[in-house]
Length: 568
Image 1 (cartoon, rainbow, N blue to C red):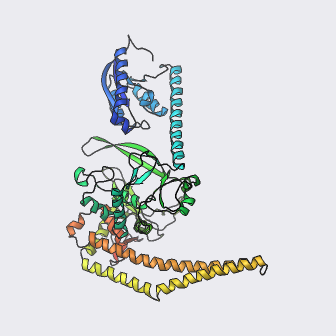
Image 2: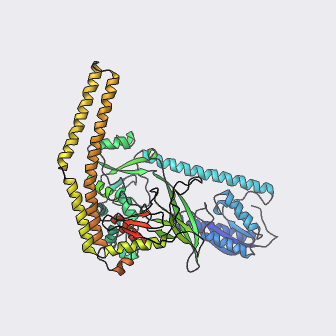
């Protein structure tokens, strides 16, 4: 880098950045960069105005606390140069470097790295630009090699060790696999038992918080540091294949043959999947209520096609497969409330549907900050400029949600009536399911399936012996497939009736335990997320009508109507 001794202003800002939290906490690399910059500034005769650091910040974005500080100081004037040890400390993308250079030039400030190879001439800038592109190419290659290396380890049956193992397990001594941690796995089993027994994820979370059980992320009691269990974690735990035991035959279809060949055929294993999602990270600057700038990191996950997943076997968790499957079934239809435009949409997730086309109503914010209004509307109202649905009404979110909650709250404050309604519905379903002896009905359809299999075998044998021709065989097999389809359909109906009864019983117990009988004041203090959980337990259905009203229906509450809703 050329010397600037003897001319020009000598006021500089020193900037250092590391991208990982581990580097930030160690402080070694930050200190190393600052020391090198101090030496250079002293040698060149610069007056250092400020030393700015960005610990644990990615160079993939310009939204960083330290970089914001640098830009503020440059805009204030009087800065001749901003120094960094390497050009990629400012930004990893050449386009961002260009933007910074243009922005700083307006304030007569240069941007320089100690590894610069050119000068401010067009030729010098071209040289630095080429070097930036080469550096970017090298970083992309490093990332690709890292991803391929992890993929190769997974295909060899090795866990990709992160900072923390999956809850209920611990790393082996070489950190290439898992072994069961009896203490935490016993809690995982308790979670599965509570969910399979009918407890909602929210009620499980409240129980764990109330008992002060240490959270997986901190290892500290929830009573100690203010951190609490997460419903999202509980659902991820219940649905993770590592806890579900798989037979050797199942693993042969799911895992690489070389990995399966190393397993014991007489044992069962869970599966830890690598490469199911790809994540991209962003950081956003926001102004808080006190006027201070806050930086919020967000992660966007995209699911990878299932055929690209790589499975790694892990030790059997020790939980019965029936327990795991029952817990999964209990949360299978759970959906989160929509969180958009800085609010919770209580009737999202399919609760509020269009009465014309049946589509789930979408959430729509209208207007800017300070005068924003919120509406539900049918997403199928227009397709390529052609009206595909007759529902043109927009439903004011606050009014509709308020009336829906008022109707539900009245039912929850009468526990005796609600319990009686639930018990009566369950008994009616049991009576309908018991009509005609469901056990005998199931045996009848199973026998039909056995007869169909025997017929198929006979017809195939007859074709092989030349008794019937190919056309006759096709006709016979089509008839058998029709009868098998009917049998399977009836068996599914029998099973769904039993599952429906079990589901209602779970929801009844959860409602009575968590919400029913509370005082009106206590019910009104429920958060929008908690109201959403109540609606799901009640199987609430809200239907939009063309006249601007909405009809509320629940399995146990009477049909209600919300009228005089505000529309656009």
